[in-house]
Image (cartoon, rainbow, N blue to C red; front, side):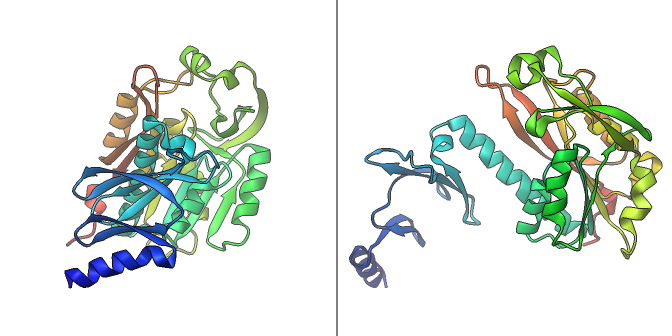
Length: 316
């Protein structure tokens, strides 16, 4: 059997295919013209970087990949990110976070995801790619961005969208806009201004703000045995969204929140305060994944924090 395997390996280049033997039972297959380097991280993990004439590929194609654990999952990265070890780490963290969230949605039988701070629908589209088929309810207050979100959701009957923000009370507020994916109801902190040049100028738009508990019945209408999950990415406003759920937060089986170690927005809660509030609401941490880091110090600026309500887990 081993002899046959080696004969096949020798035959592959004649067919225009390159095979790199990584470990017993594991091989990397590519077009023979593709040039890449393979670095073993441990006995089940490899970093694969595509190269061109011995250097990183600058063509804008897939530059590198990471195989993560025994599952054989592969994380593709562009060439520029592949040259930056910090970028590699953060991309791997994002991959692991999305996989973990998908696993929790499945484990807890989630049938409605509240996507608060939806932007143009990136989070919802990712859930669909990962196999989630339940209802998604997205909230995005920036008018131009909402138009793109509405278009993205148009062909998905189980994806509903609302042109508003969520917060502690029903009101109207000024949203700082012009910061791409970082539009916020909060002004930037001194630290934020020092980190992001985009915070130097901004426009504002008056937008409606609603409490989550006031929209919950409408959003869950038609679902049998609702088991909602709350995802928040509101640029420093997550705890206000959480407060707006009131006592009905007990209906949620889990949540995901971007918590800040180094605060980018004036008045946003520190990480410890946010997590303590979520824990007081009955949630426990199941995963913490770095979102951004300081290049000069390595300090994490923000984490994606995933929390679930343990007493809502299915009985084995």
